[in-house]
Image 1 (tube, rainbow, N blue to C red):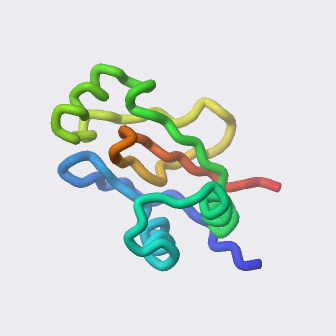
Image 2: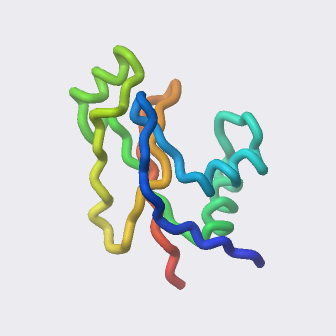
Length: 112
């Protein structure tokens, strides 16, 4: 079973505040091409492949005022989600918006 440990990298967000880890992008393109989402089983496989646990934060629940601003123009640049308080060395893997809202996806190395 091949594991490609996902590690933190510098986050450089685009003009709208979105960003995704470059290794995540490569994996997504190779396995899902232009798909907008994946099944729970596919997400579990992604986590296994990168040996990570993930935690998702919703902008709507994290900062309602910024969520309203996001709804007006799709701009996430003012949102700076905080790391999860759960133990571990969390790092940002994704910050994005779609028709379901805006989200930050945190990751950390899965420890056996």
